Image (cartoon, rainbow, N blue to C red; front, side, top):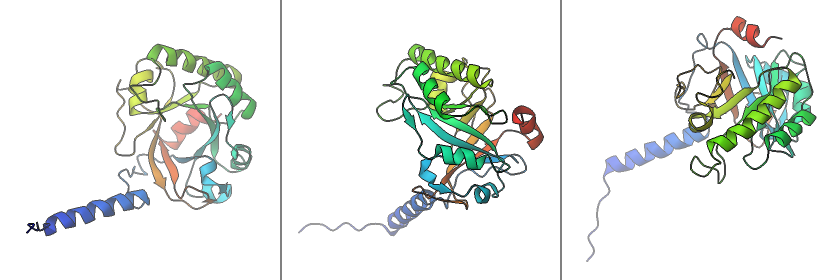
Length: 246
């Protein structure tokens, strides 16, 4: 006869707790980061078509100071909700900027053209943002080498700065930062993603914005994604306005 092995009650409890914690995190109830509002009084969001229809006055009234809106990706993609979001976010008190998702597959020049034809020049807007990260089949081991990526990224950044008259912000996460950005793009504001702890950059420079959660739950949007990305600025409101209050 086969021997029946009893499962320890402790193991069952541990499995239940792990499953519960995963579900709570997935639903946005459990979050690892809770930046102190006194330390980080300048709060913001970033949005895309995944947030669906946004009621900007309602969203802005969640204690927010800024918002970044997805505009473009690669050399041909435009976010379908960008125009609506850009125009209506601009009618609130928020400082608003637009971001571009960098593609390893096309040139920096054509990516700049895509962004420039999509995002209007607006004197009081936040600087353009270039989002560089690993995606799909492009991992830290399979993405283009440092020299190639930096060449195209620099071309994109230079063209955006020339057109908008503002030095772009670079958005990234820990591994792409260490691979491409560290000790090279020293004069660019850094917007870093870290959902688990306050970021420490590999070259020990200071970040400007921190995306601390993708599980935010705020009023004012009804889209495919139930959650929204949450961000803070490193510094006071006066410092934020001194840097970006054009």
